[in-house]
Every structure is written in C-alpha cells, then in structure tokens.
Length: 539
Image (cartoon, rainbow, N blue to C red; front, side, top):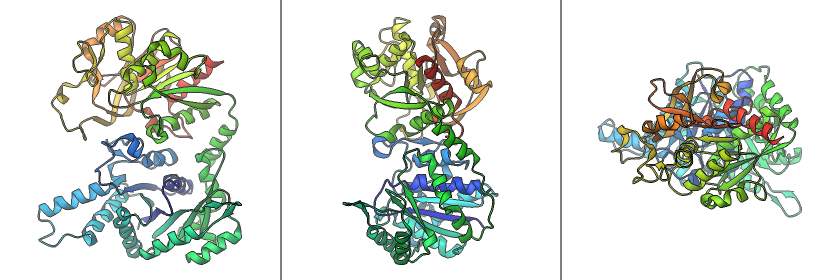
C-alpha cells in the first residue's frame, strides 16, 4: 500500500507549507523512497492559467502542459518527483468533474453532495497520482489555504477519510503553524494550540507538528506544545528563520530527525540518508565570492512570486559560478523613453552587469522592454530573453537594425504593417484564451557553434513552452540576412526557438521557459552560462 502524508497549515497563510512539503520530499528521497507530490488548491479556477500573476504568483508549467500553482515549482526544485496534470488538484477541477458525471447520469439519480461525491473525487485524484508510477512509495499531499478556511474543508475532510481508511501507519498528518514573537522576545504557543484544536474538530489529529518560529524552540516549549496538542514531544519540530537560503531547510529538518520520526510512524525500516547533493550545494553557497547585478526588466515587479522560478534559477546559476546574484527589479514603463535607459540601467542608475527580460502577456511596458534590449545590445551587456524576452529581441532588431519603425508583435499592435512576431495561423480565430497556447514539453534542434549549443552540449533538447505568438517566418530572411542568428528550431524547422546577437558577449533569447527545469543542485545550463558571461564581463 502507498503511504500518504497530508501537509496542512494553520494560524495564517504564507508560512512556507510548499517549502516544508518539498523539504520533506527531499529527505524521504534521500532515504531511498520513491516520492510523489500533490498540491490541492481551494480556488474555483480550473487551473492557474488565466489568473494574473498578482493574484497567485507565477504559473508553473509541467511537461504535459498543465498550468499550475507555483508550489509545484518548489516540488521540482527540491525533489526528483515527476510532475504532471495529476499533481495539481483544484476545487474547480473537482466540481467540474462531479457536475459532468451528474449530467451524464453516472450517479444513477442520487442526490449529489459534498460527502461523499466531492470528497470521493478528491480521493480518487490523489490515488491516481500515486498510481502513475507503480514504484511510488510515499505521496505527499499539500492542502492549500489555512485550517478554518471554508474553501479547504472538502480537502481536509478527504484527508480525514483517507487517514481513517488507510490506517495511521499508512497516512499521516503534518501540520505547519506559526509561533509568533511578542514584545520582550517571548514566543507564544496559544495560536498553535488553537490551530491544532481546529484540526481535531475536523476529525484529524496531527501526527507531526512543524512550528514556524523566529528561533529554535527549546525543549520546554516543545513539551508544552506536545502536551496541549496531544502528541509526543519528539514529533514537534521547528522551522526557524535562517540567514542562508531556503535550500538549507532539508538539512535543518534532517538535523532535527524529522525524517527518522516519520519513517518510524509509517513503519518503514530505517535507511541510510544520502544527502550529499544538499551538503555540496551549501558548500557552494558558503564559498560564493563577489556579486553580479542582474536587471530583471518586466511588468510584475511588485510581487516577488510573479517571477519566482526565474529568480530561483538565477540563484542556482550563481551557486554554479561561485558568485552571488543580486536582483535589480526594474519596471519597464520608465524605460519607454530611450534617453532614460542609460540613466536607469547604467552608471548613475542600477549599474547592472546583465539584463534578463522574462515572460509575460499584455501591452503595458513593452516598449520599455524593447529599449532595455536595445541598450544591452548596443552597450555589449549580457542579455537573456525568455519567451516574451526573445520576442522583444526580435522587435528591437526589426526596429533598430532593419529600420522597420513600426516592427511589433500583433499581440500588442494588430495594425502594424510589420508584425515580426505574430499569431500562428491556426490560432487566429481562437477567442477562448484558456488552454489555447503552445504548452508543455516540445523538442528543439540546436545549431552547432552557437551559444545555445555550447550551453546544452547537444543538438536535440526538450523544454517547456507557454505562449501563443511566434517569430514570424515572413521575416526570417531579412533578420538573418542582417546578422541576427537563428540558432534553434522545432524539429520540422517550422518555428524559430532561439535567436542570438552577433558580435556580442552573450545575447540570447529562447521561446521556451528554461527556468522551470533549474535546481539548486543542478543549475540550468542557459542560466549557468548567462551568469558566467555576466561574471566575466563584470571583472
């Protein structure tokens, strides 16, 4: 039988359930177990694809094209567990499936209710994720929201039922709460006690308590929590503030023997822990010398999670190059006046060593991004364009090298006479934006003797896409004829996947999203080489 671990949260949101669940997954993998990760999101949207980044952070894309919550990005960075549509469950998906079954008469005329029909659907989706690989040992299920939220009740009820049906050794509850600090530095346990009580009222007795606190809890506090929360004192752990990186958290939990306690509770024989990659990563972190400043030029600068995977991939690349990456978040709107670009990006301004333009949608701030790319090209500053960032390179080249003043994307200007970036012909009549993009894993063929080939070291690569607009083939000849390098294509040669600037230290744009495959223990090759070029230029 598969083992299940349900991770819930209490007291308040944004405590780090995703990181805690991911760290637990990393520890269990280090013990030789085959882990799967599942996120249950209470929102009624079918997926995260049509939500603004300001609502829920970035959209993380899986190989099979699922547009999911950013916590799946944490799962991917901390664990080796494969991710697909099955690993993201939303209230919208659950109710949509139940209503469709009701309309098809599959409930045989019965009254359709939250219990058992909604909870049965949730349970079937969790078990389906476990069955994707017959070798799965443990499924870690993160339940979004906070205990007490009305939206999370069906998911917590489904967890209660599975714990009852599977038995305590096969299904555990891990509850993450906040231990606040009041005046005088005193840590208060009462909010956690109330949070556990709320779980008990739902019929779930937490087996493991993880306390988010400013500092490590002392033994007396742990015993007090155990007493009032009806659990053993060795089942109370601390997720305390660290001054290094979130990627040290698996080691923090390991030192507290979290994985040993969970293995014991699940009846799994003790196994030797192999965490060499995590120890090595921390050695690289502590050995970093010097700083490089990367200007992230985009439109969602106010919310860090809007470009979460990009920021993390830059951090990973810094580890690989032995240098600390400083993020300079630059709103693109002020850059729409090119005369201000040098003052914002260069000396007297941010003085960035490299520029990255990430993905995005909509017209706002586009001309500012084009000017950022132009400034990087003309001043030989390393530049990395991702998805929209590659299209920005193409627009810049069209306007300021080819001399096509109105060169643009038909996404932003449908009246332009020079749509150097345009909609695919088979998408022109699509009006439903949900699920109409080129999504998920696609292969590309890479030209030898190029920056992208130097990064990957192979001619055939596979990366994830999320976009509707493409480099317009009508401008291929003019672009390449004036020097722009077209260096990667779809296997049939129909679509351009990468462009590079000639006579430049490192100017590259890709139509896909490499940030989704970067890990702290294995930086993505494109990010690695970008930071290497920035480091070399900054010397």
